Length: 352
Image (cartoon, rainbow, N blue to C red; front, side):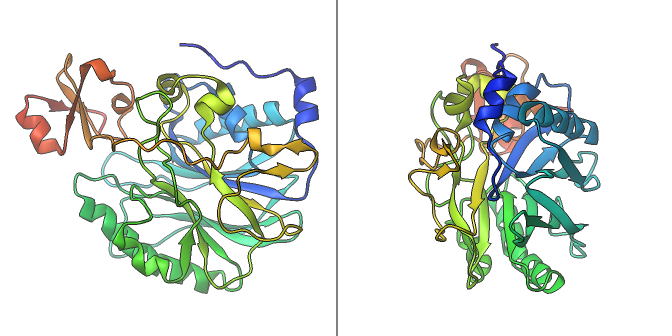
């Protein structure tokens, strides 16, 4: 596999001007911190486009700390981080993390895990309040919803997020709350109706999971929900289709070395006229940001199967298993659920 080579430092200095605006992103980083061959130089190249990143699927604090170091090397700026404690049912646990540039973003307070007394969430969401250099304070919430064999379990979490938003609005009264993450449901699912009464998805077209077919994207699972009824300095929003646009690599290489999700983002710019949906072009400061941030919808592809089996090993994987994104299409067998995979003679990967 090819490795991404970062541009020299002199190019970096001309590419990243000082600015007061902030671009806030959410990204399922796919098992950051495991020994899985992740190319942190490439990850940092993508992450350097943002000022604050809500990360899902962080597997260790050390992995996120290594990414912070890579971001600092890429941008020449200081980055800081906030971590949740490990969340998840059973032996499989993940962390949430917020990574942010300290010259454009300040952490105010928060960094709290939701107390889910009804145990609706497989991984309770993580929230913190931040402030841009312009003085705009907001709450960023990171969510990694369950990917279960039953869509009803995902829908139950989406419904429960309304109560969570109500709690956040009460806890951080006066600050707009942005609900971001990998929800494993498209924003058109009816389960979002309760949340939709007080918030709206910024990403409404295209897809955010990287298909095994080069150049295609599969599901619109990642999003940022913005509060309704408030004046917000959102100049644009979109997703960053990084494999070809930024790194010049194939989808197979992206899934293997970076992530199987692309980031979603919003551009906070108090000086600009607010726009709630993706702009066709983005130009911030003295350089053309459209080559860095894309709001193009991408090509919609069929949804990936809930369970992927390896015909050679006869082992099946769920979406959050390392083998799920690394099973070649030539030896891949798709199943709608675990029961049918087992009936087909496959056994479950032991890392789940």
